[in-house]
Image (cartoon, rainbow, N blue to C red; front, side, top):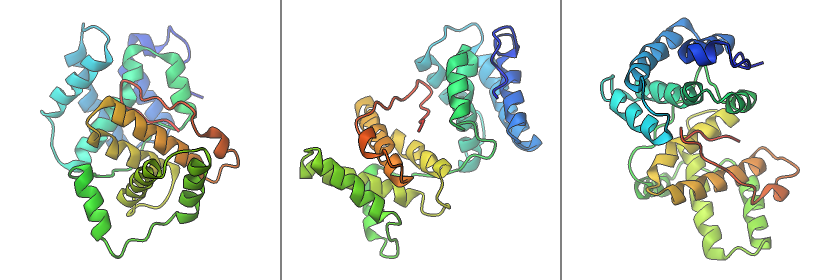
Length: 235
């Protein structure tokens, strides 16, 4: 059960300590907690007395990140902390409960790098003769359902390429919902428009239910998939 349910608890008085308490309850290591806390103290200081705004929050996160080590692992941990901390900062209890129930908060987050542009990554995937798509039956089932629903072949082909890329960038990790979500979040910034990001998240969400072999997967095609202001992906 999430530890931020009462409005007079730490969430309003000290959102950083409320976030740290949640991490402890999830079993995060002292080292990981201290690393996140150090970054978030700087972020909280930069956000002090500022208007609550998702856009301002993202801009401030980017500014603070520039003052921290730029190695891939550290930056990934800091970005994860910033995404998770957003709803604590704005005091959104309902969203926190939903995120906690969806197991979004990760004491040991998966780090997936997506270097280059979408075009670069697709070319890399095509050139990798050793890689074999691990989820062909689920992918074919999803694409067949799109065809049945009347989607054009050209649109289906684009979706197939993006889904194969999603599976490709996570190839070095053991398959799991946590890894799937991390791969989606790694690719998301490569879409230059908010519309493109929304279409990709919708695609990833629809396929997710085929990927986990949900019996109701076909019926879930078309369900809304939203991206929060902290760019957190929820399945």
